[in-house]
Image (cartoon, rainbow, N blue to C red; front, side, top):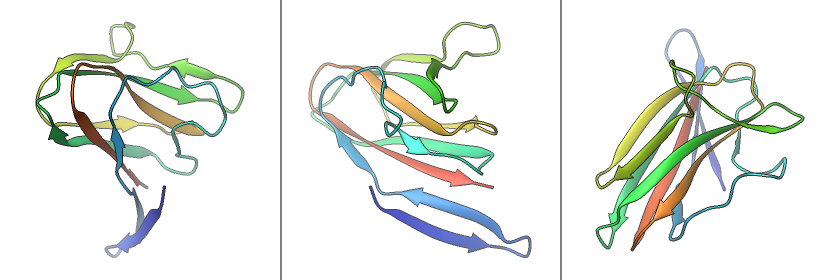
Length: 122
């Protein structure tokens, strides 16, 4: 996955955009230290699911790597961060300060494909 680096504004905030990846089937839970994308030294990531092909219904969950293990992210209520049965494009911003990697996993996909891209900031 290629990275595009940008430096913007007077504050010099660094922005890194990963090239998008096409996902055409459900993905496994991350297990390797190279799964997902490197988010060290960043505070925020914007994740987009776009370029839907074949009218898919898909579901997402969020995983974070601590340098020792992958853990499933949770929402404010403590329940796993999950976005089930989506049928349109999706975008979400996550606070990732202190983590080494992030993986927004497509854990269900009935037909077709979706593209996933990450933009890391700060």
